Length: 556
Image (cartoon, rainbow, N blue to C red; front, side, top):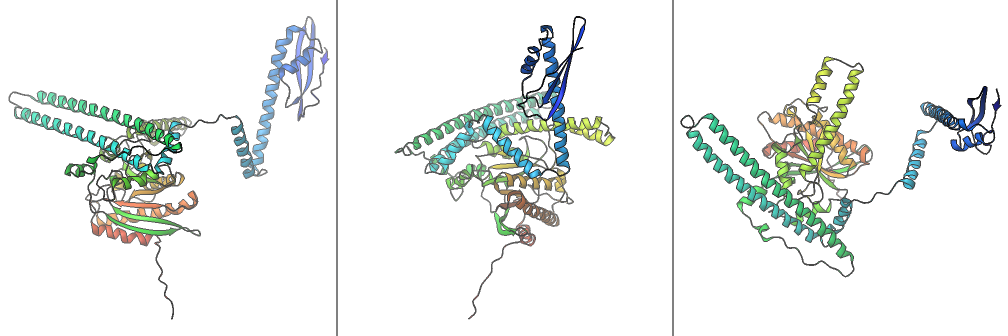
């Protein structure tokens, strides 16, 4: 047996030395090769392999096997060293031997430097470029031209919707007359089967007509969006050149100001709106001023375009457009059921308002809801697989099994207290809508501060703080419509709960955003009485700390 020894690279800074052992046979002789290597190894395995083969005249038939053995040895020993270093580092952190703040800063600095050095810079997207261009133009003399163009597109869509509604109304009237004739002949010359066949034909006809108009509206809005964006970019480029000015002004279509009973009835109905405003200061040491408003109004009034609004459509729209890409966004809380759709109730009414005007900046409401649905399905699938793993590991009982079955059956639905968000540039006063899921429990009188709807409001306010939403409108009674069981005592109890909870959440805001002044609007249904409204108005300053004026008099 012969032993060969080779010293490691003396110029390399090493922390440990380990012996690499390799055995091989040549004929009847058994050879052992011992090589001390210093770790971490600074040289490549190929380079070390050559250092072994050439100086000691090793036979060529062991070359590949020696190289594989050397690679495997270096990899295994390096992993052991890394594991030992990691364990030592974790122990140091665990027993407080390392300053966590200093460690986090070091990691952040290293990550930032590595990212700046090696990561490819992201090219700005079309949406980002268009947002910058629009923000520049809306804050320039071209703003009036932009608003006129937007409103002309709005009028075109409104006329298209009016044509659709008229045609659908005529179809329903004709079908109603046909059904009346059939019902008169029922039991004489016609049977129940004939009635069912006619009803099925009517349904198919309505679906075909609705699909035809929906496709036409979708195509029209897509063309408008493309034309508008191209025109805005071109106008911005033209105005960059010195000496260029605005070309021909875009005038508002004349029929915009034509006040017809039909137009007033469909677009906006001016009703007597009750409103009270308050200024409050919240905070323990450093107080922050907030504005509170109590309004009797429909939630969708903040979304509809008020064509005949007394302040003028352009002025009313300008404020929303100016703050579209700003740190002063406006949000609205809409109470919905657990299905992500726009087929019924207030969800359908909201979708109808969204479709009355083309959104030139964000996807349409249906596209956004489809994305939300996919995200919910993915999140539910992840939670379901996690619960199954926990169930298989031993946490098993009948209650859990029933609950897991329930979740599996409703993967596409959301739970009470959860909410999804849609973005809009085509609504009257709203940029962001929070669709908060509530159940029938909100109509009872026994909900508490831990109710999912209340906790959902807290999470919504937290999102407002982190995403520059400085104005948010909340349904004070957590319902959009009044019903018989909602007595005076029910309303007072519910309003007191929401007022107190929102006050607590607003005080938390100081730790979330550093204390930024915000506006919170509490909305009550339009069907509520004036007497009830003023009782709620008197309650608000008792719960919040309302700023009072001081009268200073001089002594003579």
